[in-house]
Amino acid sequence: TALITLILCLSLGLTVVSRNITSTFFSRCEKFNEYDCKKVWDAFQQAYVNKDPCKVPVEAYDPLIAAAPFKPQCNRMMFWSKTKDVVHGFTEKRDCFVTLEDTLLGSVLDGLTWCGKEGSKDTNTTGCPGWSDCENNTVRSFWIRASAAFADVACGNVTAMLNGSINTPFNPTSIFASVEVPRFIASRVKNLNVVMVIQKNNISNCTDPSLKNLRQSIDTGITFSCKDVSESRIQECGSKPEIACGACW
Ligand code: C8R
Image (cartoon, rainbow, N blue to C red; front, side, top):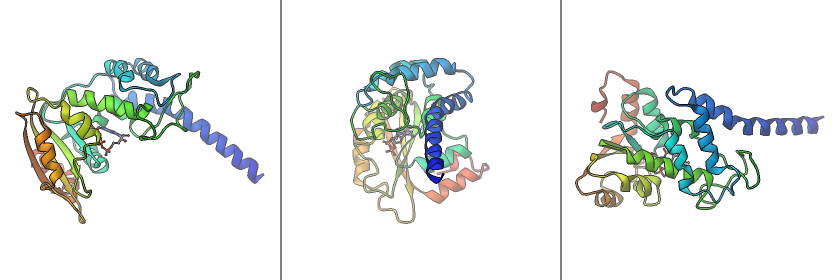
């Protein structure tokens, strides 16, 4: 009976996992009122259904982006690299900044894995290629396409949180460096303000050489600043609404 129970649990678990993406997508989508979730779901599916999960180019998601376009939110847009938890820990509590995960598309697909299969109408959530298993994989192409569209609407003062606990806070292979920064254009973006998140055992800060590369790679006309801010200060600002957004750091 132990074996039968195990098999039952496993198959039940699998059914729950694959059913989940549809229900997760719709329940997250319905929190945003101004969109037709069925239309967005159909545009999402056409990107990868019935395709080899390693042959989904970035452009496959163009119709999805068109179905749920990003709205510019000047002076409030927040980008990040290797600081997801700190950033979202803060943005969840305070309404100071907007990240990609605060938009419909970023929010419905955050933390999910999905892919299709040639000759099938299904959406799988297991057995999908990993981030670096192949270049044009379902999930990676989505995040590249969505990040590009989000960066395209960046305007005014733009903020980015980078991680002071790693060797190369501005890493050329990151989506932030390779997709977003090249799309910040001086006619729309005034400043790029980097918040370097400093933990107890930090190994880099605003003086890190990789930040020179960032300064040099931004469009001429966009001013650059960098500020070392302790993680505890960011958390304090998150939990104290009496501190004005502009006074957090
Ligand atoms: N962005 C990219 N990747 C995202 C993401 C997002 O908003 N949201 C999630 N969940 N992911 P990293 P990076 C997932 O290496 O490469 C945008 C993806 O599965 O720490 O510089 C966002 O606007 C991907 O594997 O950072 C942000 O500014 C990792 O998280 C950059 O791009 C990427 O996390 C962050 O991309």
